[in-house]
Length: 97
Image (cartoon, helix red, strand yellow):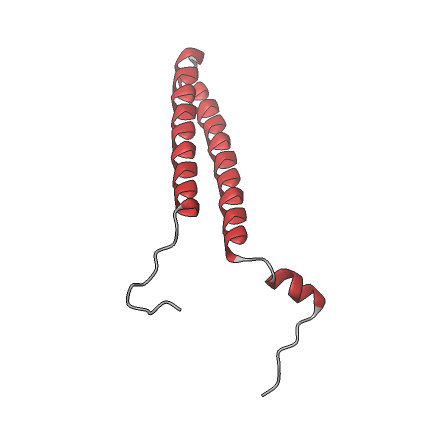
């Protein structure tokens, strides 16, 4: 059987462990979600302002939406931290060496 040989760029890519990859994905997805929610809030504010012609109502709903964004983001970050910081479960049926 022949041994696997890796090119230098393949070694660099495959040398990254699973946890850093997962953390990068969580951070990147969080930034994308926050950006999308802020863009949605801005679009919602513009649409509400155009529909009601009342800046006070549009601002009130915009601020309420931003508070929801903050709570959702905080909850997502807490779940990510708990997921990454809790020790992994080990199978009790497998013998330890």
